[in-house]
Length: 292
Image (tube, rainbow, N blue to C red; front, top):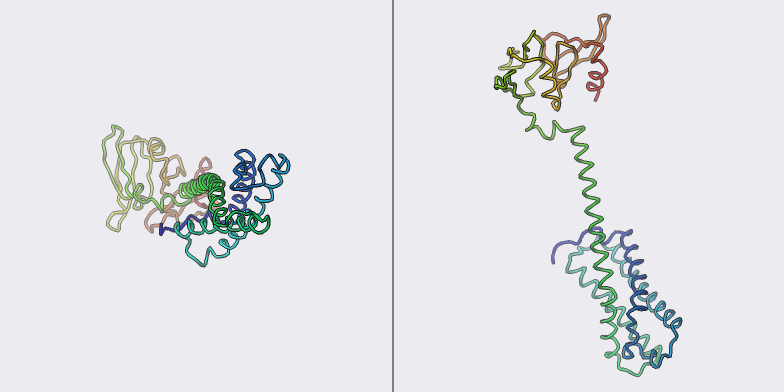
């Protein structure tokens, strides 16, 4: 009970929706269930003294008075939501206070305004019972509905964030998956495992490929029996890009993209490595990835 209530319960929009729902539900409830048939609650219904139209108008006025009290209470709650801690216990006490004020107000109107002969403490408890009965269902339904909407909103935000992570920060936020890259030969036998961040590029060499990577501060080369095309297909989810029919490179290792009279070239982030050419077939894809 010491936990804070969800923020959606005291937002301005949801408070207005709650008031509207309570208003229409109360009108419907009072005109279908007709608690005013209980002459101890509303004695002027005796002997069909009120026509259906008069009864509807009476219930409308009573509900309007109750909604006015409720609206003032929720407006005060909204103003104080950042100044006080609204725990579940405090929220329950607040609701009880609302029902108590409405019950006392109704009892005073009936006792003084309509000059009811019954004792005040006979009218007020019965009024509290019916008001609680009227408010119970719309409060529960609205809580469940707003809770569901809030969860949908959070879910939508999580999906959007997940999409953002996948598209923009996947490699930075989830390094474990891309920490290592494993190379198998054309028979499926594991031949080389290295940290992906140490990989620079892969070069086609007949039926083999040369894998260039950093090891102990120097560039090492590993010869692997496998086609460059199969490498491209197998590691499509890695930030590897085909820039030439003979080269696949780690786009994260590209330092400079330059164009001269001989065409487009990529300067890698290592002094002793050659600049890799970009063929026209792959130029659009490489340029797009480089500028992301």
